[in-house]
Image 1 (spheres, rainbow, N blue to C red):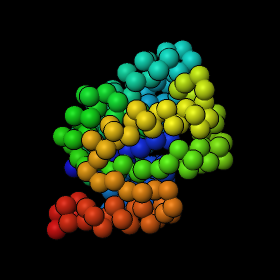
Image 2: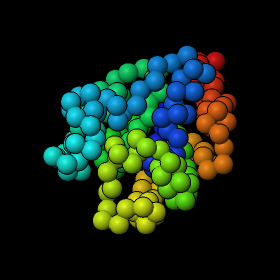
Image 3: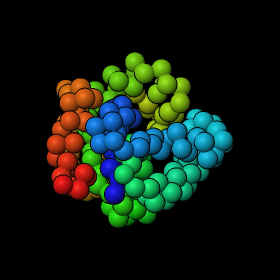
Image 4: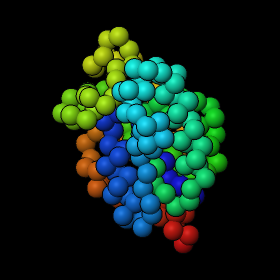
Length: 176
C-alpha cells in the first residue's frame, strides 16, 4: 500500500511527503520529478512543447508505474486526480490525503518559492490568485471525493501535518 498526498500547488505535498516517509520508514517519490526524468524535460518545457494535454499523458504514465510500488509516500501534482484512470489507480493502490489550503495560502507559498514560479506554468490566462481560485473551484470537489483523509494545511507546519497523517493511519500503514 502507498500513501498519496494530493492537493493544489503550495499545499506542502513534497515537504510533508519527505517528513512522513521518515516517520514511516518508507520510500518517498515526487511524481513531478518522475515526470521530468521520464520525459527528459522540465515540466515547463513539456507544457511549452506538448501543452497541458501532453503533460497529463506523461503524468498518467508515471502514476501507472507508481501505483505498482509498495510502502511509498507519493507527492502527486495538483492536477493528478483530474483523470479518472489516475483516481482509480490511487484508490486501488493506497490511501489519499488531501492537504487542503486556501487560495491565499497557496498563492503566498507559490510566490515565495522560486522553483514554483519558474517550473510550474500558469494553467489559465489570468495567473495569480485568480487562477488559484478558479482551479480550486474545479478541483476541490475532486480532491474531496478522492481523499481518505483531509488535513487543513493552512496553519500547520509540515511536521505537524505529517504527524497528523501518521497518527490517523498508523495502525493500517504499519500493519499493527
